[in-house]
Image 1: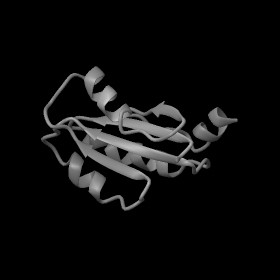
Image 2: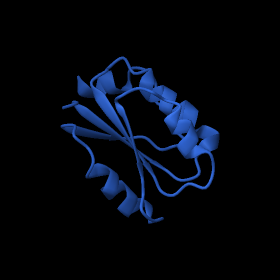
Image 3: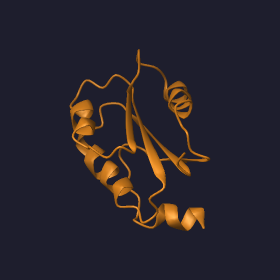
Image 4: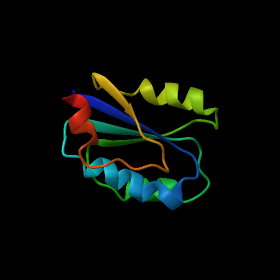
Length: 103
């Protein structure tokens, strides 16, 4: 079980998604999983996510488009980590973010 489940909700985030995903992969703290919850994107978001082969990244496609609150709840239910962290599709983390928070 990972220490941290990172929750990233995505809806049509292709323009910024790679930077957000890369910022998780560059973390100095490595005991995490990334739950990417795709809320029925109509852009290339799904394709971008499938390009990443890290087994800690878990992709889920919502059955239907919902509010962000419900989508976050659905993503959280997939989480296995003892702690939750949230990263928006258009945001990035500095490399030591999780390391500092877990300390």
